[in-house]
Image (cartoon, rainbow over all chains, first blue to last red; front, side, top):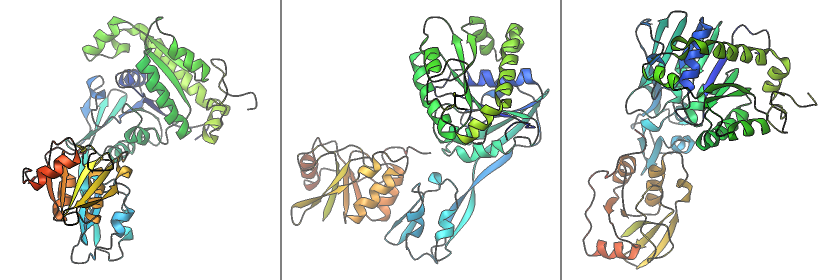
Length: 316
Length: 120
């Protein structure tokens, strides 16, 4: 990665749900134009409500390889269940029970079985659908009803990130495995929040995740008004750049409720998203930032308070 | 026979925990000796998943032939059935009360899980 990149992968995430991840991701994609927009919120994909298009090909069925035990060869040694971190296998009275819905598909059980009694069989978890919407290619994962294992499907969606050209990822809300699966190996994370106590609390959790992953990031404050400045104060004190503030504008909510993109319904917001894109590119082209991110330098990671806009410590 | 009661305490007067997989421990009562042992289950209280499965393994390893708890989910039930451990539910406040219900034959044996799993 680093500078001189020929593609940029931006993830839009947030600790709290409903802060405007999809709004930011979809509007960013629209102003960018030639970009792949990937909906990684596979439990409830909603990008297609705002940017839709003609399906490109049949949905791709995604399966996970889960264990199947040949009881005639199994001697109940429990090597598999001892190995499995997810309790997808259990041994009772020398008999193996498989709980396929718990399996993350690592294949370790089959490897460690001394009897060669385990083979891996595909278990369907969902589909990946691709749509062409003008310059924007929309890729979305859709987890099957009743399936709880999102990360493998998130990875299948991310396999559609183009080799060249930019990609924008709409992450699931929260800070758990599906979010981490989305954020891994992206170049920049936009954390969307709102100026409320809940928004701030969950922003802090999300910041911990992106710092742990060593990714450069900035914050977008949605529904910004002047009544609560705790988010901006926190960002300043933690040396986190605020990339944009989307005003608390009722017309934005009305456009959203009609399934319209903000930049289409209210063109005066186009410059805000164009500037956001430009700023992200600028941050990533800054060799200090790019190098810092890869090296997980504590100065970028908020080790010492720095003024807003300062993105590296004095020693960098 | 040995009966495992889900509990948060250390003796017969302790509360019966209504949860099976995420109970802090099991009080395993031996009806022949009228003595009990405690089986730790705290490793499951914060388990991301599979608490019921592991708890079932714990009570099976303790040699219990019956479990008395508030609820039992599908994966735990499958495990316990495989181990030929009977599952009874009780709304008793304490382990002692649940034990007397059991000995009076007042508890009904579950023939299937009585709550949904937390995964799928």
